[in-house]
Image (tube, rainbow, N blue to C red; front, side):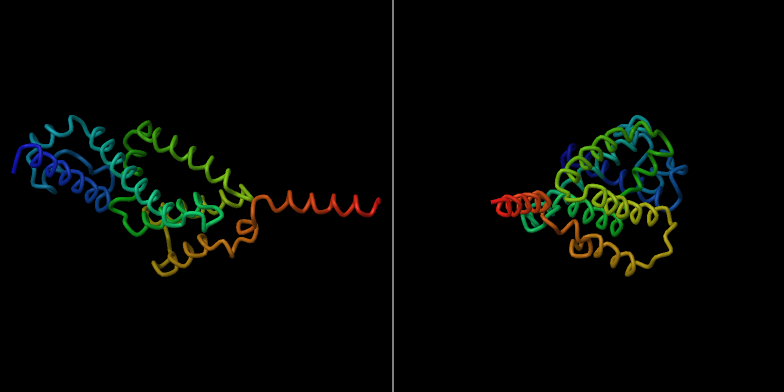
Length: 209
């Protein structure tokens, strides 16, 4: 095995160990010594990959972002033009994936929030961009954002161990959040209100004549 391959494998093992520690013991227990014990990599080897714990957290966040951006883009490609609010659907589906895959979904965010909230600036910027896309698609922007925030709540209460819901109940709620037929104004075309106004104008003109 060449050195770059060995180095990348060690890096992935270290990050996986860090996620395991955060999930099992909490963000406060994430140290180089703990990562070394969990991964079997020497402390010197870890510090060759990451100079500080902040570097570890940044790498975890980058990994999360890349993983879920890929999932979201693949979902968008799959639904195509068949879903009226495709960006919202992709976000809800992505959050459901995060709830099912906690070791690659959210623990890095929680750890960064505890250790150094400034690390979340990229996450916040991406969230703001997603909100703009969701609102642009929506017939009812407030309802769309409500569905989005509900999905986020399901994810983070699950990650924090604060949700009393079973996995089956949580799945059922995600299904409902994704089902546009459960949200009438979401299923309606965005231009419907404009079409109704035009129709009424035509009727008024006809009556005047």
